[in-house]
Every structure is written in C-alpha cells, then in structure tokens.
Length: 350
Image (cartoon, rainbow, N blue to C red; front, side, top):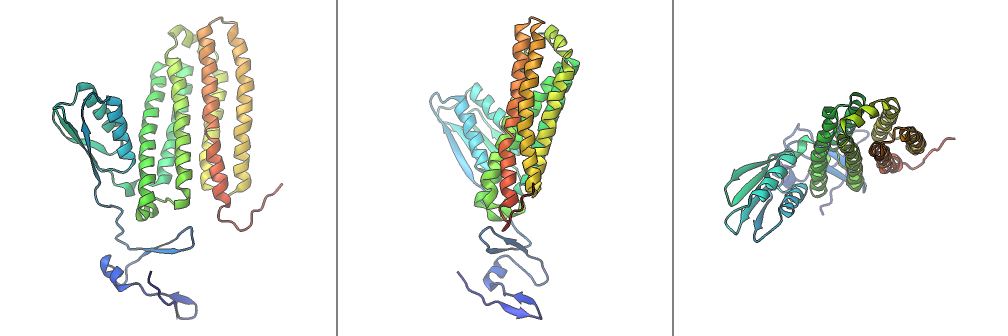
C-alpha cells in the first residue's frame, strides 16, 4: 500500500496527488474528471473517466456424454449465465446432441437476456452473451420487475372480468418475462460482487448485494404465485368462468389491494423514512388479515352454486394473492434496515 501526504491548497481545500503509474495506466490527462466513491468501510475509491467494466471474456466448455438428462444441460446453461460466463461451448462426445437436449439448449438461450446461439452443428453448440452489463442498473431492473408484476395483476383482473383466456394467458407470459429479468439481475449482482468498477456503475453497494438478491427473489416468487393463479383459472370450464365473472366485483377488490400494496412496498426502497416504511409493513399485515376474512365470506356464497371445482379454484386464487403479499415482507424489512444503516441517531415519533 502506498502512502501519500495530504496537502492544503488555498484556505480550505485538501489535496493528494495521484500515483504516476496509475495515471499512465488509465491514460488520465489534466482537465479530465474522475469518479469518487466512499466505500462502506470509510475508504475512498477513485475511478478514471474511461472506466471499463469488462473483464476478460470468460468461456466454459460443456461436454456431454452418455444419457445425460436434458434438464441437467439446461440447468447448467442457466447457472453459467448467472455466474457471468460470456461463452458456452457445448459438445457431445457421442457424436450427436439428441433432439430433446437441443430443444432445451435453444429454449434456455431464448429465456436468458443477451444470450444467443452463434454456431450449431449436430454435435456442438456455441452460445455467446452479447450483454453490456453497464446498461442494466439494479434499480432499473427492480423497477421493471415491479411494473411487470403489476401488469400481471391487471391482466388477471381483466381475465376474470371478461372471462378471457387471452388475458389470463398474458399473465403466464409476463411471468416468463419476469423470470428473464430475474436471471439477468442475479447475473448483475454476482458480476458486481467480483467487479467493483461495475458495481459502482450499476449502483450496487457491497453491503446491499445480499439484500438485493433476497429482494429480487421475493418479487420473482410473488410473480410465480400470480401466474399459478392464472393457470388455475385457465383450467376452468368456460361455464365456470362465466359464473366466476358474477363475483368479479369482490375479486377485483382483492386484486386491486394486492397491486397497491406491492407498489407501496417497492416504492419505500428509495425512501429513508422509518415511520413510512413501518406503515407499509403494517399495511401488508392488515391486508393479509382482511383477505383471509373476506375470502371466507366469498367461499360461503360460492357454496350455493354447488361447484366444487370453482370453489377450489377461488380458494386457490385467494391463497395465491395472500402468498404474493407475504412475499413482499422481506422487501419492506430490507427497506427498513437500509433507512437506518447510515444513521447515528434514529428518531421514532409516536
């Protein structure tokens, strides 16, 4: 570690010179701006204006032999993508990649943002990532995840109101997009963990990496719940969907309240108001209790229809909404912790 003496310039400005070797290495010239970052441990980091987030391209060879399951191959592609691998070279030692495995490879490539198949033969596939990680900040990815889940609830509501399979199918498709964003966000977090320059550029603090991972997982799991609710409704007979339409007014309230509380949950992440965040936490808990009580009343009315399948589906819908709300609690806890992590005094007002 090199030691430099702090010098005074003028009446109040303190200065320290930059190491000549570093200036030469990053091609820094007089008059250019540098980026400064105060790290969690109190240290100060200096970044050059031509900051590069790219490290050396990382490549992995995936060799297939015997009766390897196509699901394992697919899972390996997802894992390598999340780990930040740029190029995956898949080859079969048996001379051919079977049809099911090839289908899974193509499916995984389509489902991961920035990943493309660049060459393909009967016994090999090369997959390349064309992502520029500096273009995807964590805050923008969280915002996109939040907006997508609100759209899912909107189409779920319309699907019930209009007895529309098209709207319900859109819920399922949006969940797939949320999965794509989730895997990208995971990749960004893991890259940021090993590349501090990239972390700075995409707005990731080291102390917040674990919290961000929990956060995006909570949103992804909430989306899974809503997608499952839509799938349950898609399985209903058209006649049952028409009957359910008569109860839309009540279900609409459940869905609207769920959308509002999810919106409030994500918004408090950018707040540093302890009391406001606590109010959202109480809002979550209150809505869960209300949902249980009102869902029970709705089921009592449905009993008169004497359709066990419809009753079961509505019960499942209410449970899915309940679970999606519950998935938001870790996010509010993270927001609460972040709101006080840098404070020397926490003021709590009654």
